[in-house]
Length: 360
Image 1 (tube, one colour):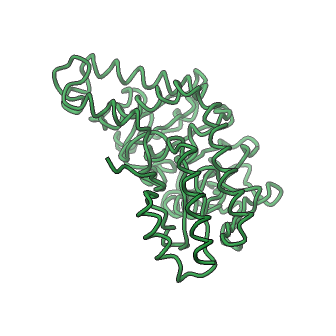
Image 2 (cartoon, one colour; image 1 turned 135 degrees about the vertical axis):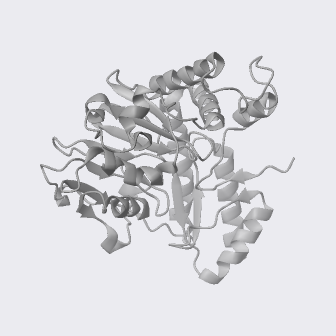
């Protein structure tokens, strides 16, 4: 087998133990004499799987009892539009804090549906930092405040949860969920595309406070109404059963590793190893302010752009996959989510040292 270390930003690396279990159960799952992809989502076996997956996620995140957990579809991008559709009127202000390309996209998708205000932005410095809280211009009457705690493209991350006063705080936690402990109760709503730390693409996990669901308007189609999905246990329509199953396996894997506190210790160690080498190397450069560096996505550049092609070709040959930076910024990017082992990061650092020595 020639499986390499996968540094893709998403769809991203999954735990090998999870993949092996899914492989073993692919044809016949849990005595059902059929694949989990073939059985009814309304049958007792799948309902039990779904309930267990939800409980495991609640345990991992310490989700309070007054929050619903939803397993939805559409990718996080669909919910850029669906969130204002559910929680704001067209004439109502909604505040967005821009810290990278994904928060920028979220604000753009909301514009046809509400009065979008840019409460703070670091666009003027190419999204290399988190705007200081004192710079934020929030509207006290806003329907909500939206943040993106981790930006996969630029590698910028909040390392605390901002206090936004009385407005509901909404967070796109696609690339940071399960990577460290945090206080769910400080958010009114969290949502995450699964393809970073949860499972395969095509699934979205949402954690939403009950009182926010009461805002969902009655005059929108049920399929877009979060309250309707909550009332139906995320089975208003046929869910992504394969994604839900794999997410459940990942939740069990995270528990077996020691939970999110153990993940945080591992993720900190991986990030410190990679950033530490970049800073010491004198060869590679990370553009993000140190206080805002992401634990999950580490962009870096080489001294000369013409070296990029050789770096990518040689790193792939060495079993280090998907290191090309996003087309919006170029350079390199190593995504080191929960399932990336420390050994993978060490292999990357060793390659980077060797490449620098040969191409200095």
